[in-house]
Image (cartoon, rainbow over all chains, first blue to last red; front, side, top):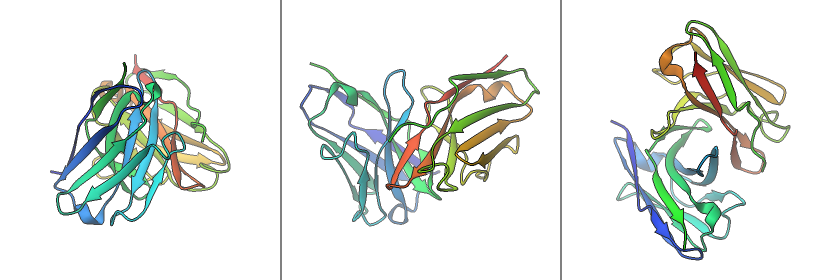
Length: 117
Length: 110
């Protein structure tokens, strides 16, 4: 069964850092690109960033560029989102999703990040 | 990048059809046939319903269909069923190598 499971969410102070992880199973991991998408409370979905199959190409939304970075470990089947200099507006449920055919075909259940002092 | 524009709500009775619109610009929906639609039941993982404007992934009922005209894409749900009640989001690839989502439409089955 194809599955993505996010972890690492929690409460972080403004200006702090947090690392989210996404573990994949049942997926041809090294042949898949992945994205992070978030949903702030009461808001719609917002694309955060992308990492290519080999990890060499990353793209980011303007709202997180320079603060967030995405990496992957093809030996452990994991994709990480390193969040730095977090702001209140980064409070959201963060989803990991597989990108294919210019769409997101497999999603995790999400992990919640709350930025608060 | 601004979000795509969706109506906040839509509704229909069981068995009826409902269409949800998604309006973008010439930099996203108008530029690419890379529009996708997602069904999201709160607290659960979003589910891909339509990709590349009108293609259905395996397992998605043919009651769900997609289309596009100019800068506007649409999702039509025919033969509404109670389990179709959810939030629906459109998404498009954007010219600067980003993706953009719509604000979401809450579909209510009356």
